[in-house]
Length: 270
Image (cartoon, rainbow, N blue to C red; front, side, top):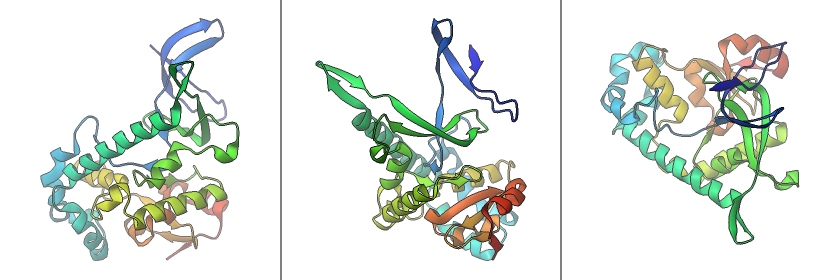
């Protein structure tokens, strides 16, 4: 059984949660899947339950079979080394390591002993402008319960710091200015220190893997989001995002460009 988790009459935001029961007449107990907002880890399955390794051969030939989807010679040269040496298998390898690292991190941060028993801290959730993604997962920043907000480190940020995720911030889900700086510092340092999956310099980032596979399957034709360099407000075409350092990328869907220009101001094309 599922129930609608949220409804806003001004704009419909609908997600679904598993019904666990009702302790009393006005307090349902539900279970919901959360997507950590603003970050992206390597994939262990996509699309659906298909393993990335199933696409190794086709990804290796992608620039030959779908050259028109990747608009410029420079962009194809950027992608080429990422599409060699079993790119799907490597995606799965690092995705599995990221998953295990997250489980270990959660155990370290959430488990504690009290009265001779293992207990778990509550979770502190913060949501942004967009509540649910296209898969009806709640988009949230998730942190162990902590009374002092200054000590409340989200799993979103911790995974970035350890190199198990890259920032993937999509307008209108914008972090606060001070949080942007934390994100930039975390990803920049993880890259430079080759933490986590950054050890594999030719790994397709999660969002790169998805648009490559979607291109193979005819769902997309290369990348489809515009990219803003948040350090200077320069706006790049979807196939030029790679010119911006990963930690400085803000992605914008084409249909949101007009609103983003109005809200952010100062955006200018390269």
